[in-house]
Length: 69
Image 1: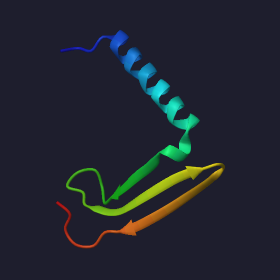
Image 2: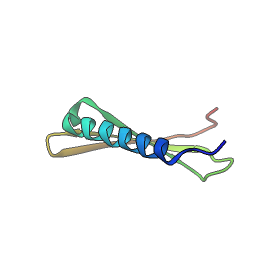
Image 3: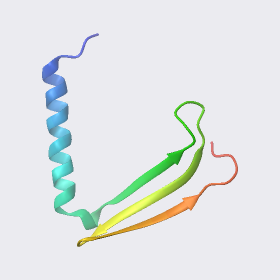
């Protein structure tokens, strides 16, 4: 079933509004950044987290060893 352009624009606008709200209070949110070995049949090999406080961005990385399912 085709998606109407109006739906795409509405979804895009909702995403923009959500992102703007998050950016107004960045210290309330934590960004999770999973790193994988590829797109298909990939494995999780690292997880990064970012927290914004004032104008400082702190990052923590953790390497994954073994199988993650």
